[in-house]
Length: 119
Length: 110
Image (cartoon, rainbow over all chains, first blue to last red; front, side, top):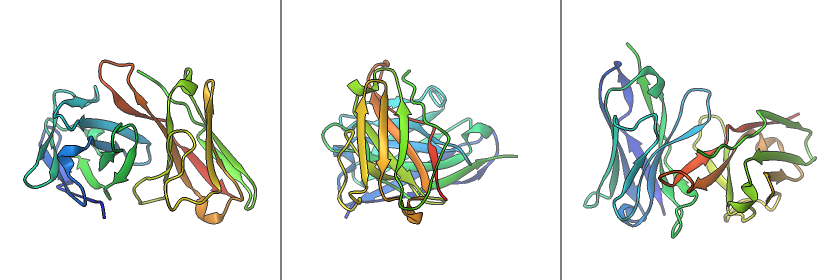
């Protein structure tokens, strides 16, 4: 059974850093497109970042230069390092698996972890 | 970047048919996927590749895509269908492919 379990969210001051983790089971992270998608309170879904199976990484313009996506193949875990956090980064962050082969849609989501950026 | 436009809300009586649209420039040339999200829960895929249903999704959910509009149709609507619905495409037109979401539509069952 495929499972994605996020952790690492919490309350952080503006300008601070946080690292989110997503522990995967039932499949191999390094063989799939893996992404982070966020949802601000009362708002819609926003794609944040993706890491391809080959290791290439891409970011939304809103987080480029501040966030870094990575994975640890030995732990089958996805990460999101978030630096220089802003109030507008406040959101539930979901770990998501891209569909096999094409990665064009999300077939599995984690339960989400809340990040609150506030002084 | 590619933009998807959804109506903020749709209301329907139980047992009737709900249609939620997703507009985009020549969206018919892309594959559209739909997600259902209930309050406090993660989204769930309900339609992929325009009209395919994942296992476990009722046949009442169907999709179509042509021209500049994709549509999610929910037949014989039930109270449990009340949720937010998001359309999504894989946008390869920018310098890097990424997932694009519509703004979401809140389905209210009257």
